Length: 25
Image (cartoon, rainbow, N blue to C red):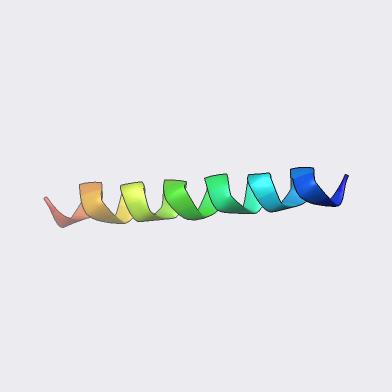
């Protein structure tokens, strides 16, 4: 299940980046 954990980490990172971009507006 290590691969799944990596996918979740990637998704969390993408979410943070999206939230950061939204907060800039």
